[in-house]
Image 1 (cartoon, helix red, strand yellow):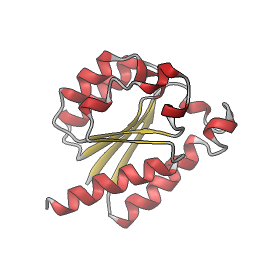
Image 2: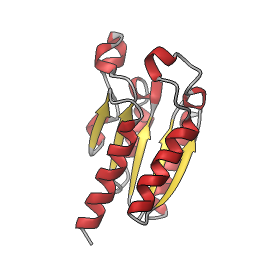
Image 3: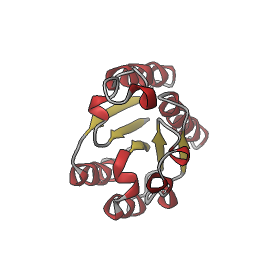
Image 4: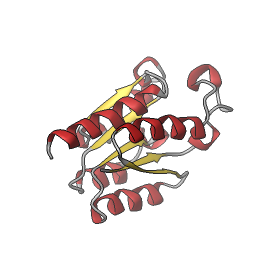
Length: 147
């Protein structure tokens, strides 16, 4: 199985940016944790981060065009603003799970709405970086059961 992990704007600052909200783990820590999960399933991960909306759209298209088995995406602030990301997720035949480190529903009102959620298989919020692992395990287990 091959899973793409996409990270949106400012997640390159994870561990430094607002640690009271996002914690002290870095994006490299998240990647390493996911590699351990993937290893148990003999799965391949493609881990990426961009601060640019169009690049995230291109990567979602690539996930479909190159037959990835799933995508875990933390669209970060684009969650609340990007119809383009919604359309990219809706327009591919690859299961996508949306992840947020913080509980967006306990934060500012503008963070309560996700443009992506209606197009995604599911959404995990508020479980810290462990949410990435849960999303990955879900995609890997779904993939195993369809073999």
